[in-house]
Image (cartoon, rainbow, N blue to C red; front, side):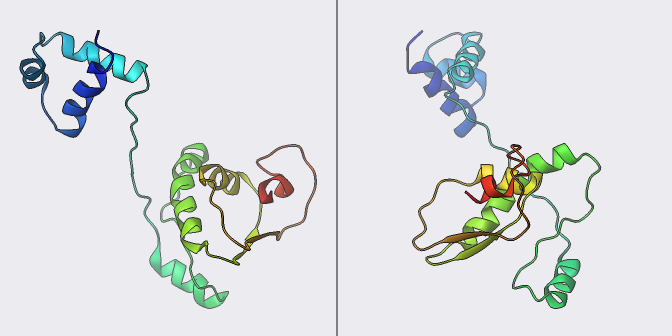
Length: 155
């Protein structure tokens, strides 16, 4: 197979929305070859899928927390699910997005610990922020477990 062909056909299929028959006509190959090219594109990691499924938040409860604590911002999930592993996989990206919005020169970031914090830290890209300070705000204990070790997360 042509080295660039799988990426080209995958682009026509996923980006341009062409069906397999149209791709086969356009590419000059049989319709049965199109799924093979798409499978090869997946096998060679030429295709990356990202599904953005927003989590519902409870704005009223967030306002209660903002006024009671006083916080500038609060993000509270509505209808928490019972499957915490599923939730942790879903909360990392929006959590990292909220954190990225707060980053600016000389920012001071208070860092806790736990599995949700760990997942958000893992989802953060490495961004240089001049004068930023990360301060651990909850006690420390060298646990060796990166998910609950506040010192490692702060680093």
